[in-house]
Image (cartoon, rainbow, N blue to C red; front, side):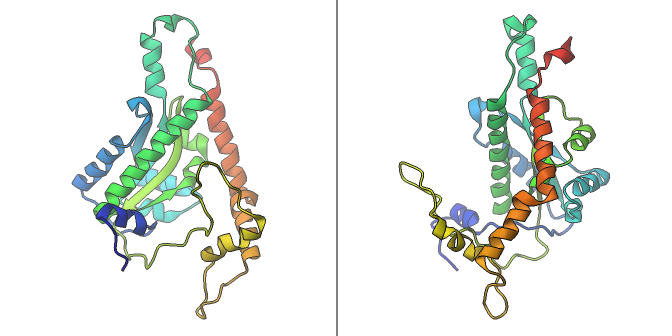
Length: 261
């Protein structure tokens, strides 16, 4: 076992995604600690431009599982959270209290989409680390951004509220053997960005390729890159995500004043 300078570093180094959980494995007290950690995350201007929906109703959990590319293990997780970028309460407060509210005051644009998303993701990461410190495992599910209109309808999302990620948590049925490998490429630079040379692309993905019983890679680096292209940019799910994100952005960026007249 590696030696770490402290427990926090160990958690960060050893944390891995888990998708199979023991039922009822999170206590109300542990849940409250996890949710409190979200509120302590860094956020721009202390505005906390995010919200959480804790999904408890079994029918709603089943809906979320189906909406997220039919992943039934989501419905079995003890804790299910939808992380939301949320500028709704601040915009409504501005409308009420800014002296020029009777005029067409400015409203949140692309910059606030980005900043609200950052707030939501920082809150989610705080939740994961707090949970991990108590032996509670987790997994992020990006597919909550699919089926946006249905998610918006079912969870009553108003204007300036959009889903960012799904977070599921619980104690693992079986502890993972090891953390999956990441790319073998520099991601930290000094003073300026440096593009990865083309002759390093194959080396970059080599640690990510599964090995057979003989210890040899199950496919070539070139094949792995081609398969990853299909998964990330060339599949129907990629196009589905793209279309839904465009709808979310269109909803956010449309003028709010027509609906206020």
